[in-house]
Amino acid sequence: MTDVNTIARNYIDLWNERAPARRREMLVANWTSDARYVDPLMSGNGHDGVDALITGVQQRFPDFRFHLIGEANGFGDHVRFSWGLGPDGADSPIKGTDFAVLSDGRIRSITGFLDQVPAGA
Image (cartoon, rainbow, N blue to C red):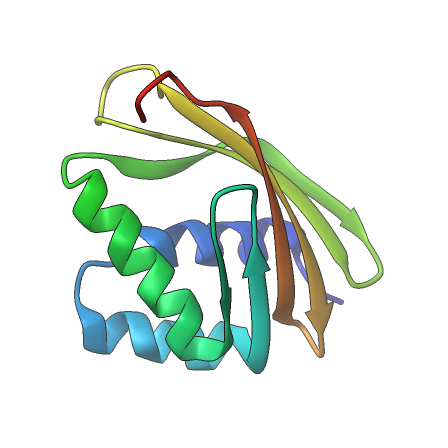
């Protein structure tokens, strides 16, 4: 059985990973090769597309980190979790909720919703 909290933690760890080689290892281990990510601002396909999105977010917000808000939940091959993006030790100015669809315990798709985004972010 898939542990939804492990899926969510691995996802957050991926978005916080700054070393490109390590991030690629994490993608290969935890995402299907044809995985898709989509939210209201961006989308990417496959490991290369998702990695490019992560790199872009890290460049735009170099001093911010992702963290989980609350616990993940899910059923079957579906996982839902909320996250914050901001500086360590402060309330996150950017917050969202992501829905994952899994295939054999790995992420096949993410649909992201932005719950809080300040103007100009």
